Length: 127
Image (cartoon, rainbow, N blue to C red):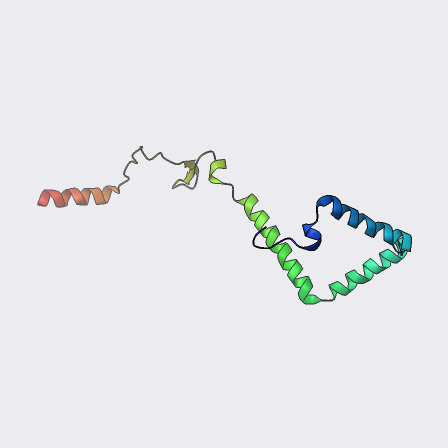
C-alpha cells in the first residue's frame, strides 16, 4: 500500500474476513430482516428514490454533462481516423477533384502565365 498501514478488517487474512462476512448474512436471515420487503414494496421504494433524485436539477445537470462529454469524445474518436489507418494522403487539385499527393522527390512543374513570362524575357533582354 502507499504509505498506509493495514488496520482492522483489512489486516486480517482472507479466510478470517470471509468467516466474519458470512456471519453477517446468516444473522440477517436468522433475524428475519434479510428480505423485509415484497417485490412490490421494493419497486415502489426504488421509484420513489428515483423521483427524489430527479428533482435535484444541479445533480441531473451534472449527470447529463458527463454523459454528453463521454458521448462527444467517443464520436470524435470515430470521426477522426488515426494517421496509421489512412492508406494515402490526398490533395485537392485546382479543378476541385481529388488527386494523390505528390511524393517529396517528384518535382512539380511550374505553371506560369504567358504574359508574365514574356514581360520577364523582355526585361532580361533590355539589361
